[in-house]
Structure formats: C-alpha cells, structure tokens
Amino acid sequence: MLLCGVDVGTSSIKVSVVDASNQQLIYSTSYPEIENEISSPATGFAEQDPEHWWHCVQQAILKANASQTYKSTDIAAIGISYQMHGLVVLDDQHEVVRPSIIWCDSRAVEIGHNAFDAIGHSYCQTNLLNSPGNFTASKLAWVKENQPELYDRVAQVMLPGDFIAGRFTNQFTTTASALSEGIFYDFHADELSKPLIDYFGFDASLFPNVQDVFSNHGVINPKVADSLGLNNQVQITYKAGDQPNNAFSLGVLQPGDIATTAGTSGVVYGISDELKYDKFNRVNSFAHVNYRSESKRIGVLMCINGTGILNRWVKQTVCPELSYSEMNSLAASTTIGSKGLLCVPFGNGAERIFQNQQIGASFEHLDFNRHGRAEMIRSAQEGIAFSMAYGIEMLTDAGIKPTKLKAGFANMYLSEIFAQTIVNASNVSVDLLESDGAFGAALGAGVGINYFKNDEDAVRNIKHIKTINPNHSALSETKASYEAWKELVNRKL
Image 1 (cartoon, helix red, strand yellow):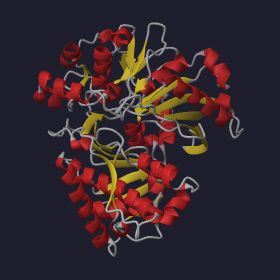
Image 2 (tube, rainbow, N blue to C red):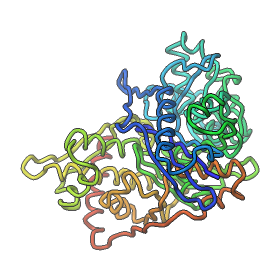
Image 3 (cartoon, rainbow, N blue to C red):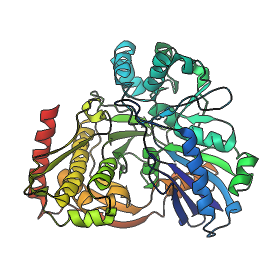
Image 4 (cartoon, helix red, strand yellow):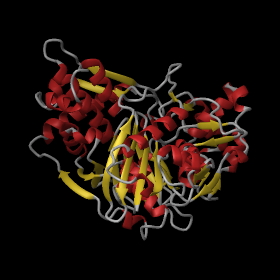
C-alpha cells in the first residue's frame, strides 16, 4: 500500500509518496519551481488564490507520478497538511468567492481586539484558549464588514486544507483542530463557539461537518482520479494545519513533547493535556491532531512570522546568484554576532508575540566599512534564531518549558549557523530528524485509513539524523549578541 502526503505551503506545494509497510519515503517533489508569491493589495494585506493552490497540488502529483518510481494506482489514501489560519470562502456552486486571506495578513487585528473585549476576556481565554486576534474568524468578519456584496455570496467557510480536500472529493468537511486554529471552537462545549458566532453574526450553517483529523473525509472524484492517474477508490483520510502536522511527523504527540520548524514562519509547538492559554495572548493554543473530547491534547504554539521569508528576501535582494547552501557557507566566513550587525526580522505582518504589533524589520548598526554580504546573511539568520529564542521564553511563561526540541532536517535547520545559534541562545538542544510536512501527511493518511494501529505506531520509524547541543565555547559570544538584540527589540515596543 502506498500513501500520498500533500503539504500546501505558502511558497510551494510538496508531495511525498510513502511505502506504508516500512514507513519509508519513495519519492518527493514540489511545485512550482519558483516560489509562489503573496499578493499584498494594501499595507498589511496578504492573499493567495486557492485555485492556484489546487493547480499546484495537481501538478505536483503529476510530477511525482512522472518519476515512475512507484505505481500511482497503488496509492490508497491521501493526507493533507496546510498553511494555518487562512480563510477560504465558497459560493453555493463551490466556487471561490475571493482570494484567501492568509495567515500573515494583518487587516483584522482591530476587529479581533474589539471582539475580545465584547465577548469577554475570561470566556475567550478559558473556552477559546485565545483572543480572536488576527485569526480566521476575525478575517471573515472583515469580509462581512468591508465586502458585504462578496459576503452575501458566501455559502461555505473553511480552512485551506478543507478546500483542497474538497477539490479532491467534491465534498467538504472540517475538524476541531481546524476550527480551533480559526478561533471558532469552544473547548468546553466541544463545538462551534455560539458566543463568537452570535457576536460576529455568522450563520453556523456556513461551516462544514466536523470530523476527526484521522478519518474518511471523502473518496476521490472519478474525474479527478482519472486526470491524476490515481485509482477511483482513493480516500482523503487526514487533514491538519502545518504546525500540528509537523509535530505529528516528528512524533510529538504527548504532553512534554516539543516540536519546532523554521520555514516561511518559525514555530515552537509543545503538547499539553490541559486547556492551557497565555493570559497575554502572545502564544496560542489549538486542538492537536490527536485531540479528543475525552482525551485533551492541546498544541501550544509560539509563532514568528518573519523567519524563512527573511532568508529568502536576503537571497533575492542581496545575493540572488547564490544558492542557499552557498549563502550558509558565506555566512560562516564571518564571526558570531556578525561584527555587531543586528537584524530585526519582523517584516511579515503583525507578530503574535508582540500582541499583534507590527514593529517591522531592519538591519541595525550597519557599518559600510565593516559589513558586507557575509555579515548581512549571518545577522539575518542570527536575528531569526534570536526571535525564536525570545519566543521560547514566552512559551515558558505559558507553562511549556522545552528541555529538548525536535525538528525536521529542512528549511532553516539546514543552516548550521541558524541551528547552533538558536540552541546557544535558548540553551535547549535540538534533535534533527528525517521528516517533513508532506511525509507526515502521508503517514497521517495511513492512520486515517486504519493501516497503522494508532498515531504513535505511524511515526515509530522516524530516522534520527543528529543532535545539536549548546556549544560551550561559543555561549558567551552568542548570549552577548542575543542580549544586545533583545535590548534593541524592547526599545521598539
């Protein structure tokens, strides 16, 4: 039996095909070759076209099939990982009403703050585990307030993964995990939040039926199966936001387990069996992939918007002729602390750790006689790592204290400078594992189709690559640079 995982990222769509019998990757690819753009029609806006995601998903599957490394009709189930918090709205013909307002869009901050006050801080924190903030519910309210002619056409509201699954099957479902990341879910009632729905004036019928993350979300439409070279019995059996899915793919399932990732955004994600929340709303709590009403599993998430997207910006702007590997080598040619050059990486929308303030990105203390491309690259990577360490301090305040992190050996963790800097600044070791979002989504599909005994059985064979421990000879230099960085950031708040 083969399993297919689809990871609907911000920059591209990745597809992995996995042999269920030994949990080994057969083939992996992505589409498009050039990273997808984010449309920003106004300051603070960030949008993408859901139909373009679906086009890229199909092209990635066809590209994988063309490798001829497996028989495509042997794929039995598909799992989907997707960028969290995005708003997708469809009309009664299942057509997209407007572009998706994605995770790093900042337009709904004030709407969320007003809802937090009106619905009540106590209810929001104890029942929603979050302020409505800048999440999906507030984005839908923005459409209702500012584009009423479009809102009147809306017949269904969903998250990006729900949309992609629906394009495979022509039917739409959602999950408690998806609704919780949109801040639509009441954890005490274990259903849609009536106070929130009533406050915003949403109709509960707009939301798809709620199912378990690991369950049959529909059988592939025969026309879609034919066009993609798949058999017409393929089921969609798993859907999860990218960070819960990343945690699952790393075997992070039980209280005390901690995952981290650093793609376009950077995240540290810890599991609790209690309904934890941060009273300052700097970190957020969502239903994990294995959440059940009788067995609470909550993912407490610290997110930095401006991580890999900054590294990409530096590449495109400062050294477009270099590969990421060559950038890492050039950065390693200069010293810890980048000769005093500090980078603040918060240029990708409102940051939750600053209670949705937008403090922007900058290079500080730039000296034309001392700093070149090596220092700019290194200071950017150090700034990203420092922002992650800074967020870990806030995660600790919310009751999640990491003693070791697990990360896939991918994205920013391919940079030794980034990985060692975050370890030295936070004094927390990182286990690097051979796993990524599409691979995890494929394993999730295996759980959903009942091939594996349970979720832990599905991830038992994840390969450990290496552990990065604090480098004691570099701790003092890194800590000094980190403290200077924190002082700079705190002046901006």
